[in-house]
Image (cartoon, rainbow, N blue to C red):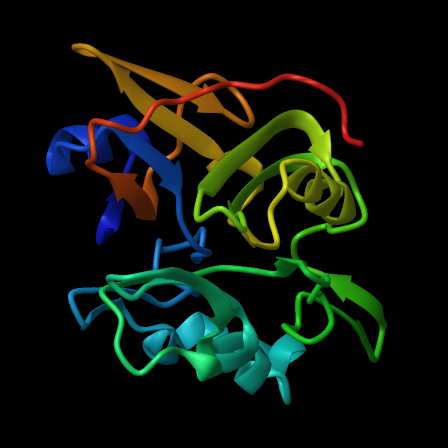
Length: 225
């Protein structure tokens, strides 16, 4: 789901009638415009190609193609779930959410222009080498899907990849992190939440919302492997 202006995850659940939600892709903090593609039922809900701040960012000159097409996305084809680069999208899909970087089977920080050496040194828009609140989505060989949120002080991107591997994911991708990292779920009439930083959930322009009541949330606490 996507909307501008955005909504907190508890509000997303109320709006959609879902039972479980996790934060989605990246966006401009200045105006809430999406930096990641989001689509449902074959229609685009966000169009990063129209994001003026993104297109005019001098630090991304020469790397916009990697941002727009090489950053990975989760695809629901109606019969299976996939994680792959946006440029390699399946011919048909029902839902799609782009974020990144790829965590498994290999980290995609450089290929997706999240971390690179610029004229003045290394640029790292997601502080990948520093512990921070992180969110991730992973796919297991048994067909299961894992949604994970690491709250502050958090994990590095590589540690988040290790967590997803420990949870037996064969493919995994990061979602927006930091203050966006949030998980919300219903327990009867009560909506509970896990917020990565601070106590109040941030308004978000995109979220992955699940409406199947058979899903159950299991919270696991521990240290990075």
